[in-house]
Amino acid sequence: MKIGRIVAIGGAVISVLGAIFYLQGQSVVGPQSSFMYSNPEWTTHGFQILVAGAVMSALGITLALKRI
Image (cartoon, rainbow, N blue to C red; front, top):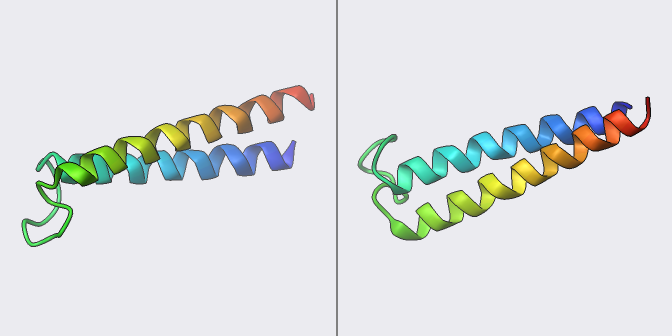
């Protein structure tokens, strides 16, 4: 059960970072001096990171529930 929680928390952190990167690419958050600000490439990267984190969280939750 412990490994499932660790994977789920790690996935949640990765998802949050992906959301921040996505929003910076969309010019919503972050300083204008950032290389990610208003950069369509980082919009794509951020979304991919967000999805990977969500999949990782779902896997962690599944692992945690299967051990019960």
